[in-house]
Length: 469
Ligand SMILES: [Zn+2]
Image (spheres, rainbow, N blue to C red):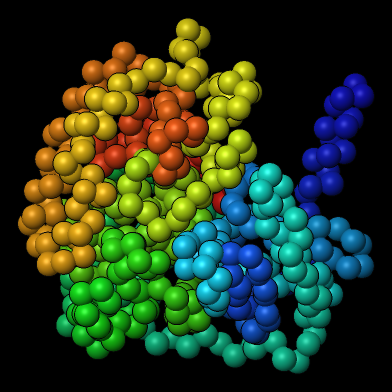
């Protein structure tokens, strides 16, 4: 009885009455996030009123414990936390690069979106410390009556299209697709690329089973010329959303630092999840949790990249691969459990976060032929052809290498006695040692499978539930 009462009290205190605290519109808090690897600063830019709040009106408190950063919106009258959300940011990746560690400053424009409050609130921003605990780094008082809050209607510069509408934004996951590097003449191509990418997404669990929980819209953004910039190869384009290859010196990493433009255009439609389709034939993409994902659509693995990157941006999943050329160094501190739902340091095997999915009798860590796998892929890994990637490697050569890599590694993974079972396989989160992934293979590990491992599926289901229940 006592336990029940505590549970009731706990759930009561978490059930925020949306209409008491919020108007139903969306606030966007824009700021500059700058610093080096050693210091970090936040400076206010503006508060912008967007349209209808597209998120849940019931699940306002984020209990998923995902993300490197976390915000709380606190009602100052009642001192109650009325909204919270975990997220990742481009700054959060940049500060781990060698550039930042050399003491160079980086400045990134970022946005936090939350429902417009009816009375004065305090916005508190937290960041994980080396032990993965959230510590406050910034706070800002917001009076919704402040005359400086920008309340002009977002300009409808481009055409919005409803692709699949299954219900009100508040009870659905609203995905918004934008195009970059598409000219006015590419309108038909954007439409067919959109169809192809969505087909790939909804051919993958848990998106197949939960299709009716999604709304899909697109905005046909025009660029003056086709394709996007590729600075290392001295290719420069005036693509409207500012996406570019070679983010943080990783040739295939595609992000945009022009957050303001992306947000102003996206504000035309309700969205929880942003996907940017890149009209280019050079392999690449990117995905940051609760920010957006990108995918270059004219490459052979584009459908795979679409699903993998959405795993990051929507599911909060970490990369399960290792020994690949990535922009970050020592992404996860040693001896600390990562927050990623699909990566563990296995510090206490008995407390494994996906232990409920491990069959009895499966050893932890789970043995696998790592040395055989590493030697099978040695000629095809990103490390090996980093130089050729930065030169003039044709798309055909890249695709041939991807196919050869798959052929060389797939059979090694499938031969393992624990293939298809959940365990803890060493090699994950860019580290060959000390970090473990849930299954031997997964969309977050290699380009081989056409499905997420069960732990990744469960993490995505949890996010779908978060937006829809
Ligand atoms: Zn996985």
